[in-house]
Image (cartoon, rainbow, N blue to C red; front, top):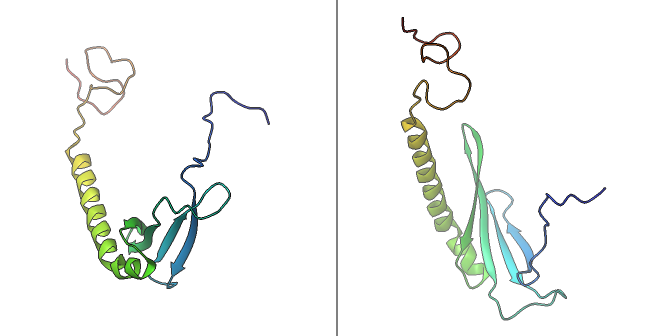
Length: 134
């Protein structure tokens, strides 16, 4: 397959490599421990270990995935902080969804504004179903 200069070149940032380990109860969620590593795979003690939490909430529209950073020094602390951090992330997600819903509801459609196409004679929008001025 030939290369296409219009496509972006995707590269891995070798200064930000992590080894990922997953810890899960198989039901409620998982915690990923991200241990920084060098390009040889050796642990990079210059950078801190990171923890991320992952879970999902079942809604009437299907599963809502949640992923969040957990500020913790070790796995035991990450496990302890998981429930509260997940709850905070859920509250933030619900707030963002409500804001998006309000923005959508406040969007007004004004006939004749935007939409492209050629206007009909008399200044109205083309097509049927609209008001026609004599």
